[in-house]
Image (cartoon, rainbow, N blue to C red; front, side):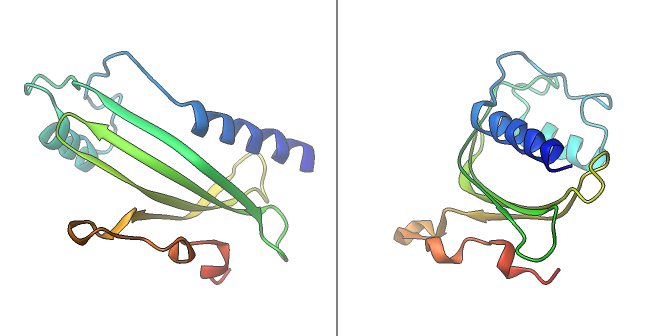
Length: 139
C-alpha cells in the first residue's frame, strides 16, 4: 500500500511542478461542469466574450508533503501557486489534507488559499510560520 501512495505522491509532485498548457479551452458545461465556476470564469477571464480564454498560466513551486504523525495515509500538502491571466493574477499558498486510507478513492478533506501578502499595498508579506500546515487542523 505504501508503494501505491508513494507512486501517487510522486505523480502529484510531478504534475504540480511541471503543469503547463498552451491550447485554448472552451468554457462550456463539458470542460467546466460547475455552473457557478463556469459563470465566474466567463465574467472574469474570458477574452472577448466568446467563451475562449486568452490565457491562464498557473505555476507551482515549493511543494511540501508531510505525512500525519499518528494517522497513516493522511498527508498535508503545501504548494506555492502563481496564477496569471490577462485580467487577474495572484500568488499564494494552497494547502490540502489528502486522505489515502482508501487508495482507490483518495479524498481531499481540506483545501485552503492564503495570498502571499497580508497587506500588499504596504508590502506586508505572509509570514512563513503563518502558512497553514497539517498541525493547524484537528483530524
